[in-house]
Image 1 (spheres, rainbow, N blue to C red):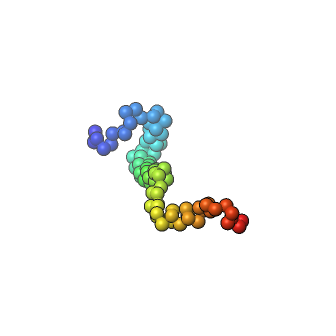
Image 2 (image 1 turned 120 degrees about the horizontal axis):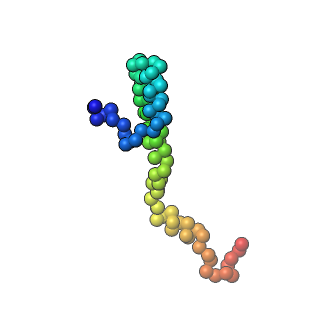
Image 3 (image 1 turned 90 degrees about the horizontal axis):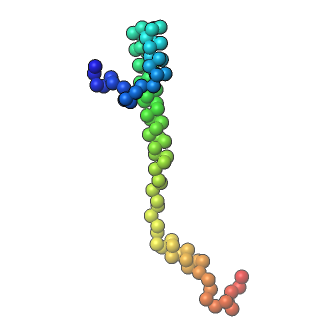
Length: 88
């Protein structure tokens, strides 16, 4: 058998096997071709969704810190060293 047609997992779930056998027995080769076409379409959809989910779990790139912004913030929030001149 063509290695590309081998199942990806060592043991195929019995439900999958039963589904394929039911389609084969009821619809024959045409039904199996339809099943394979639909399965390929669903596989592409699921893989695309998995890729989108994987990008959501990646940490966001941190923005570089601008030292001038930090210095400006520190100067703005700095406590007046002479409490007598505090006019708040």
